[in-house]
Amino acid sequence: QAVLTQPSSLSASPGASASLTCTLRSDINVGTYRIYWYQQKPGSPPQYLLRYKSDSDNHQGSGVPSRFSGSKAASANAGILLISGLQSEDEADYYCMVWHSSTWVFGGGTKLTVL
Amino acid sequence: QVQLVQSGAEVKKPGASVKVSCKTSGYSFTGYYIHWIRQAPGQGLEWMGWINPSSGGTNFAQQFQGRFTMTIDTSISTAYMELTRLISDDTAVYYCARDPCSNNRCYEIYWGQGTLVTVSS
Image 1 (cartoon, chains in turn green, blue):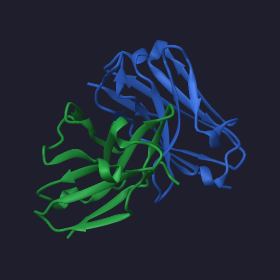
Image 2 (cartoon, helix red, strand yellow; image 1 turned 120 degrees about the vertical axis):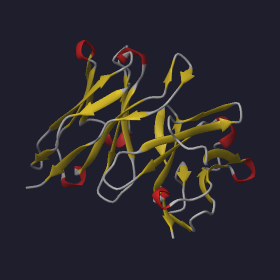
Image 3 (cartoon, chains in turn red, brown; image 1 turned 90 degrees about the horizontal axis):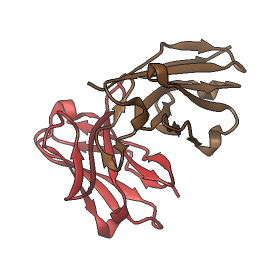
Image 4 (cartoon, helix red, strand yellow; image 1 turned 180 degrees about the vertical axis):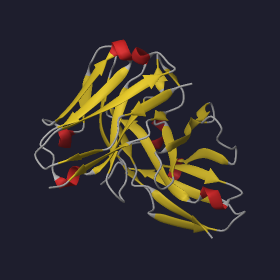
């Protein structure tokens, strides 16, 4: 079982909110991890969005709008990237990442379509 | 401002080696690990390894053990990765990235622009 699992795709309408999930393997507790989120558009490197561990341990990337926010769903053992007020420019691939066993581990990515 | 600038695209034959550079600026080079990540065409991100510029210590993903080397030149704040015995599946964009944490404080993650390595006969 993969360390991090993301849904492969998600669609949402302009102006709506999108909740992207990053589920951790059942033997590791989301509560102990900082979860990093990236946005990647075709032909460009990943862009750091934010980091979330808790309300007191989080970081917003420089220039990243506040409509991008992080949270956790402990019952689902998952990290969440919430994008509110969706815009066409938010259409991209989104990856989560954790530092696990002295390595970086990436989720498989979610392709967000805004239509 | 923090910048990571990588060397240009490469085309290599199977069995050859490739070396990619990552020149950093705007911060203390020895204060942050440098990671290498690759992305095959149409695929996700795959972490390859990190190097600690302060000590030279490294850690690799198991699948790259034996043909992947990371080095640094602190005099010019530059990190390098070398991949040997290339196969077609090594065709990918290779990225360097600066770890966000230094001295138990964590900040932004910065990425290089990527280097396309094409392996083709």
